[in-house]
Image (cartoon, rainbow, N blue to C red; front, side, top):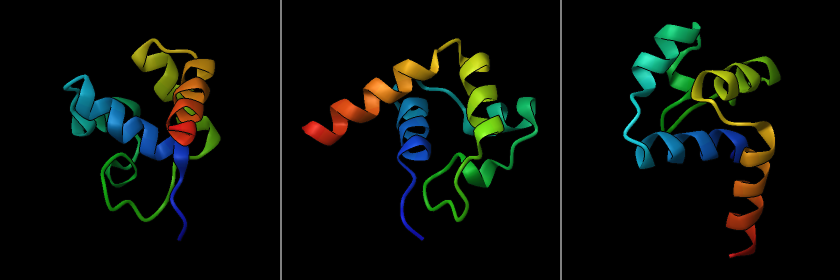
Length: 72
């Protein structure tokens, strides 16, 4: 399985902002295995959007963060 840049972004975001992936997964009904390192299945589009709303970030912010990491 190749790495999902979106899933990797959120894993890093959780660490950086001291957010519990377990609590987030429970609140949104997402498999916590999709929010932690070593995930086997990436987030789907609906989960991505639910995370954005829950965390109060816009999808464009995620895209910008990914672009910045790729170009570094």
